[in-house]
Image (cartoon, rainbow, N blue to C red; front, side, top):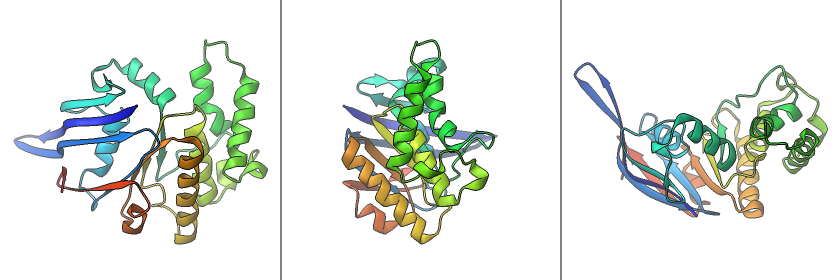
Length: 225
């Protein structure tokens, strides 16, 4: 089981100007591995992560999920894969303000379950279990405005895991947090990796974090250096 970027390019054009945000990158991550993607702002880290997760399509090259080129799939098929196989954690939590923490965690499962015959109470139980796993069982009924930044990110992590993904892609997951909360989130992510065997890909500026992952790559001007 693996997620592979094979000779991937993402090119943006503005008039005669061409920007290669991702410039011929090849890398592979296997199930239960952890990878840190390092580099300065604008290096292409987040663009690469979005390509790996099927949020964007490459200009050229392949994104292979267990041998299937997800870049070549129709939007609906890629959306289904994102919902069922890949979890996302972003810098700015993207929680829905009108819903409680529990309801936010349940949301991807509710979307997945539409028309499938799955029971809503099963989603609710799994969401409660995940909130307990991230240490927020007592905050289940709170809305995002009632949560701290660290708590909001923990809810986002629980939400990313609700459909039992094989790959958890994190884009600067602590970029909006202080050092204490950042360390707590990293400890949580590595605990989840070891306990669930989810593969972990983290885009970060944190050099020390890269020492904790199985391997790391550094990107500059869209290339692995």
